[in-house]
Length: 356
Image 1 (cartoon, one colour):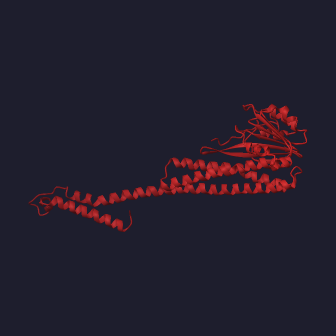
Image 2 (cartoon, rainbow, N blue to C red; image 1 turned 30 degrees about the vertical axis):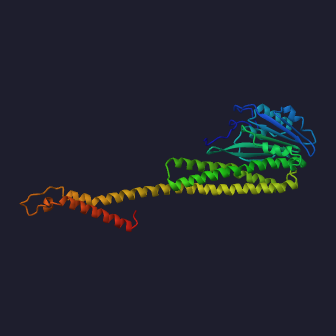
């Protein structure tokens, strides 16, 4: 995982200049929907000229650009739809911090789309340009995330069909923000499994997983936290394009963003506590091993002393200081009885003390 993934202009480039970009891009796909209360038209793999023809229509227009756009295409879109050059620069150079910009009427927002790739967290940029009757969305990933929203638009009874394009603007933001909930669900399940493994038997490779968990949580927090400020700005400031009825839905969207941030904060604390749990479990396991080895060594110390004494072989029969036990007929079994008795007594004593 790269620590720095933001695309940027060369130092010294003028603001809004996208000619210096040299990033390889695949041809993007354009999907246009023209809709109203009694009208609906949809075209996939549309051309830029097809999309520009709907702008002057009295109905609402939604254009979605899927994939990385080239500088030439962005210049054409900027000229056709009045997108500010600074917004075009942010669309081209993905990895931007989520934000909301007001370019003298039209609104432009950058959002972060989180995704779960196996056991890793990744984020992709979603850019949305909103003007009166026109919404243009950009997603730099490979798969289109807005198909559920198109299904809602295809339904004639959908609330989106009966309202102005500001409700579609809200629906796009709401879909991106709500994407955080399934990611947090996957992350919570992964944390629970990791906690069970740490309590059962901590392993050295789990330290890498814990470190990855903390990096993922920090990444999500850094990319999702500013989205709460975006919704707050739409609620706090007066935007002529946002109708009062849409503000009620934005309050619900703001509530979802706050919930996601609170859950992320709890996950960040949990990741720190899991690291402490790993260190504590590893230390406790080491202490258990040392305790068992200490008990074994302690048990064998007295028998070692006894066999050491009787292994000195001072058996001179004429010396008053000789060891008479060496000549006992039952000396060998008696020594074993003494050793077994000492070991059994020590085991009983350790057990009474709950040392094992």
